[in-house]
Length: 328
Image (cartoon, rainbow, N blue to C red; front, side, top):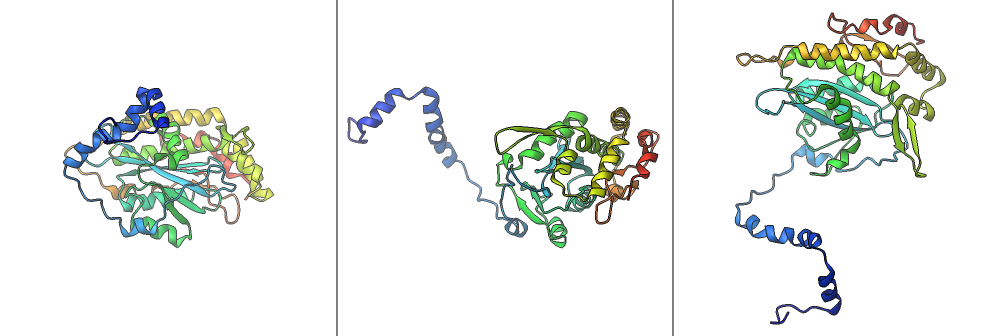
């Protein structure tokens, strides 16, 4: 300013005398990094794919007033080494109710991800209106786009580098998946099958028994399970709502928890991929079609879908005979 390069008003001079060091660092940080950034060779921005151009950016409001608006995300299980083929867990979270559905795949190709989408489609007991994902290629591909378009489901995506746009499913990535299976590497067909034996049990426990805290418009908090939240909205007719209540009443919660522990032990004992062999991804496709389905009423997806009973995971001990007697 003394040499005429800058003109400062009295107000600006007063603010400069009072500004904190942290504020200065925050303001000048981008400017100080600019020369290095300009000196480096910059790669031109990657052009958007046709699918990305067809999927609009959006955010599902936290105070959505109806179920069916699903956030979708994947959790990778590479154990700190991203080389080779490894498992992914696809997680769907309904923003309105907190209902969760989870499915494991070997790799994240569009083929296995479409199979996982179809698996979870039948585990959501209400109409799906919207699927919201991040910008990963496992979602933004022609197979997933066609799958949702054929079912007349709105497909939206987050803004790039804005993880909070998918905040509800991101939270479940930690509390619903990582908290149970951890950060180990899973890279074999056997381990994917073990994960898909575990996840229906975890989903059942979360959706029917795990209370969730939800912030209300009036500033208060409601603490209910996803099932109770759906029952309060009266989205089902009386017979279907009663069927869900009967389903929960017939499940021994302690037995369910022990079945989850058994499934975790089976996952730990499942053999990993051998370095000298290639795992056949096709052996993981269509696993969701096996097991016992429990239809609750006309037009309602068959949920829950019990995995095939094995010696490792005695799902049949979970009052399965009683569940078969539910009202249709």
